Amino acid sequence: MKALSIIALLLCLINFIQCTDLEINTFYIFTKYRMFYSFNTTTGLPIKSQQAPKDSNYYFYGSLSANAEKNTILFLVQDTEKQKDGLLEYDIEANKFTPLNFIEDCYGGYEFPQVWAYDEAYNFAALPSNVMNDETGQLSIFVWNFTSSELITNTLQTGPLNQFAPAYPVGSYDPTTGNYYIVYVQNEKQFNSGTTLIVYNMWTQQVVQQPVYFDILFYAPAVDFVNGQLFFMETSAFGNYQIYTVNVQAKTVTLVYTIASGKFKIPGNLTSIYGALKNSIVLFSSATANHFTTSVMDLTSQMIHSAPAYASTTLDIGYEWISGGF
Ligand SMILES: *[C@@H]1O[C@H](CO)[C@@H](O)[C@H](O)[C@H]1NC(C)=O
Ligand SMILES: *[C@@H]1O[C@H](CO)[C@@H](O)[C@H](O)[C@H]1NC(C)=O
Ligand SMILES: *[C@@H]1O[C@H](CO)[C@@H](O)[C@H](O)[C@H]1NC(C)=O
Image (tube, rainbow, N blue to C red; front, side, top):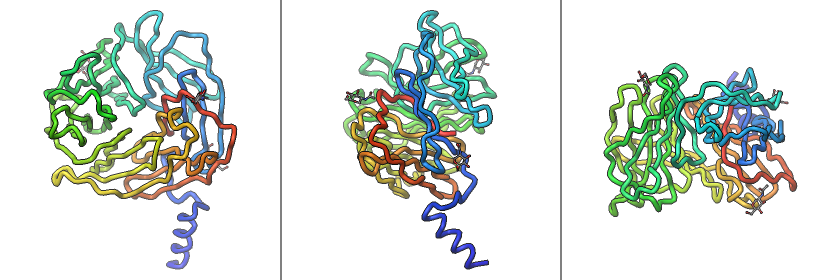
């Protein structure tokens, strides 16, 4: 029995078998020009590479969720003709968009390649951001409320954000508590070369964790809150990816995992290489210029499955913006 489990562990480590029932089996990329690419995160092989329909006037902000059974992705978009924001479902197999719920307003601010908050039960999507053209702008949470059909801005008393920081505000939403874990970079000299965490409850609209400063700066930050544990991640396509556990009380972070990357031919062509779903995350990496790998990590067990590298000299993903896993 013991020998068997050791063999199983060894096989896991060299990635022969799928070790845990990972929640993510597919990594996808959706570009500015609506190219859709997906990869099998077990085998590392491409599943789809297709041009999505271009006939309608949508601007894509980000993706909110995906449904593995239906093979669909839910995007938050702006109908640029009607100036209304709403939900657009993408059927991958049929390669077809279906407009769902639209609100009577549209967003004019910044959004970055990042994971969005989406609460199906409470019927809203949300995003932490800088306010456009406002040098003294504080952290603002924008809420697309599909019940009241309006876009709401909740500005928190964080003091001004650093507009020139490499990082931008990102968050991780916990739909079981309504808590939104958000990191940003303050403008104040003493704190502008590190990361600040704030936790805001979307249901009660109250700050439930006052700002906590960490002495670490990320270029493409990602946050995930899983099973009572907070994680910070560096996901910049220009280097290796790093995954840290966060001790909020002690205001410290601990590096738990590094994924070798940073060899994309043109890293600027890949602005989002990350996805999160339930307890798992997925990262798309390149250990050499012509090898692409997906790694799925279960943050609860910290088990990782890196797919065998997919070798291609022709894969040219550009103007990439939205990515995710399902
Ligand atoms: C990935 O490939 C494996 C092995 O061929 C297959 O069993 C699995 O269904 C594939 N998953 C997806 C999401 O395509
Ligand atoms: C959305 O609007 C409804 C109806 O006005 C309100 O009850 C609810 O609290 C709003 N949700 C958020 C997250 O602001
Ligand atoms: C990748 O970036 C380069 C330089 O910015 C650009 O010329 C090229 O067209 C991009 N590739 C794609 C597929 O967009």
